[in-house]
Image 1 (cartoon, rainbow, N blue to C red):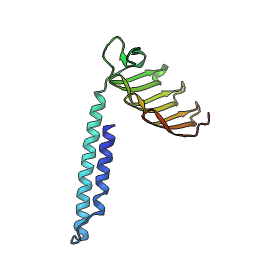
Image 2 (image 1 turned 135 degrees about the horizontal axis):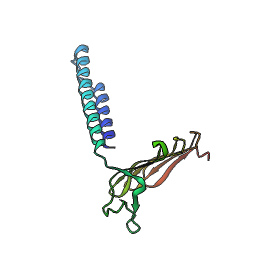
Image 3 (image 1 turned 90 degrees about the vertical axis):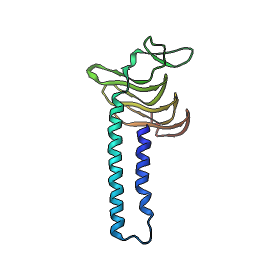
Image 4 (image 1 turned 30 degrees about the vertical axis):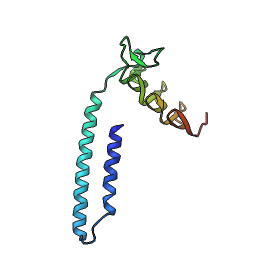
Length: 165
């Protein structure tokens, strides 16, 4: 998530300077300055992509079937651990076909949550932030047809499209 914000920031830096220039610059020096800026930004993006690839390796991944929800706090824990779970939980069907995948932070759903049909096609996908629906939630039929597209902000439905059940 943080990586997306960094990329958005870098791309905004890329486009904002192009509209601003001093009146005394020649076309060639402007072009050279833009090329330098572009090279700098490309280098930063490469660096951020590398950093993201390293961070993904550090995310703790567990079998989602071993997660337990505490009845009193409603927080998710891994197996018998008593500390709220942070990481990625995934369950597989036969043949390593994913069944469910979700991300957690301090025991709450935080990030993308996905479920699949037994044929391997996506069933649902949604985004969570601090245990609340926040972002887009999509639902498909088993044949791959999108049937529902909803947008949530802090657990409140703000937009609903399709809903063809």
